[in-house]
Image 1 (cartoon, helix red, strand yellow):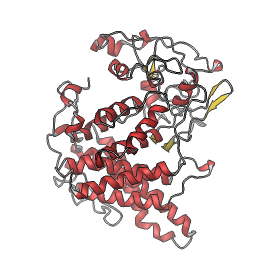
Image 2 (tube, rainbow, N blue to C red):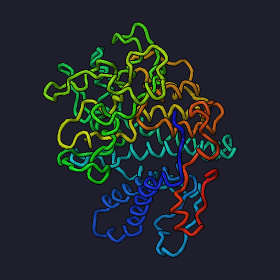
Image 3 (cartoon, one colour):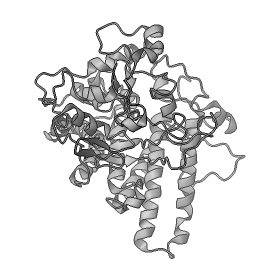
Image 4 (cartoon, one colour):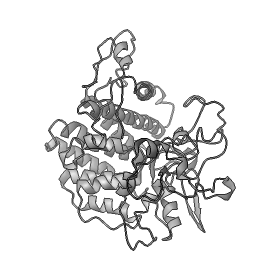
Length: 466
């Protein structure tokens, strides 16, 4: 279990990255009108929209992780290092990110030419807008006891509308198995986390920037020859590969409780005994690490090489599981074995994919009016992709489960759990989940780095409990 051992300096790098982004985008927006007359009007709007979409994302993470950190925009950029900056208000962040992302969604194209893949699209801006407004329902309205107000209802309606625009655009769809075989199910699912297209017989599943990818960070492996061992400086690409992959340090594994979260099933067309997503999430004993004979890694996953952290230290394996250790399969299949591997890797992380959009739409629909049927249909669309039986009624339990199994190991769960603490209907027992180490209100938000409080001469106030 996560012991929640955190001090007030642990999130300095997170703070620095977000504020570098906020400063850069705000500075560009403060000066962007200087080029307005020298570029085509439609190009100018697209330049500005890309910048505002990025800034909206920075605002989102700042307000949901730090609650009331320093706020500024293009009209109030800090320009005097001798003046201490104080906390902004959550309202400033929520209002400005909505304005930024709305502007971006109205002025971005549905897609870019193939040689510009990775630029923010209208769908990405709408998805981030819908996500932000859904989170606002918890972090702002429910937290402050105004979850049933007219303003809260309107906020949810706007969240639904933004996510609905992504759905109605028909630009995106779930990657489905072309044939009902285990290999095709796995290729369809893992294509969302691979850096290579996945062949299955005569079928091929596109990986990066495929139809399920709404917002995807681009990594390039053309010049990946890092010589040193200092993360983030002498390495490039996705640094998580070193820590999580079977070729890396092997110091993070899947808690077997997740394995049990995947439902058992009978009569599945692919012959599965459990939700197919279990097998695209976890490496099991004997799984092949790579489908390509030429890679040299078409060897089996050996759980005894990966089991020290969990099995021997925490003794979590109490029940019958198919493997002594459960490895992380997403973003680790196929194995990356050339250039500076495993110090870096070319996998493109998906910030938002279409399955997440459908599940967020389902949740917003539930929160808005208990659902009118469209939210349940969206959730069941995600289940239908892997031929799991439909859910009969949309409930918090169904939403929590589906996000847990569909988005497992993709980095969404912690943020989900925190926001759900504000809604008793979601019944998150944080004390149990974190072995009595999650304290409210302290752990609802990260601590503002002490160095920032010191640098701002006390004008910046720490979050409660830290």
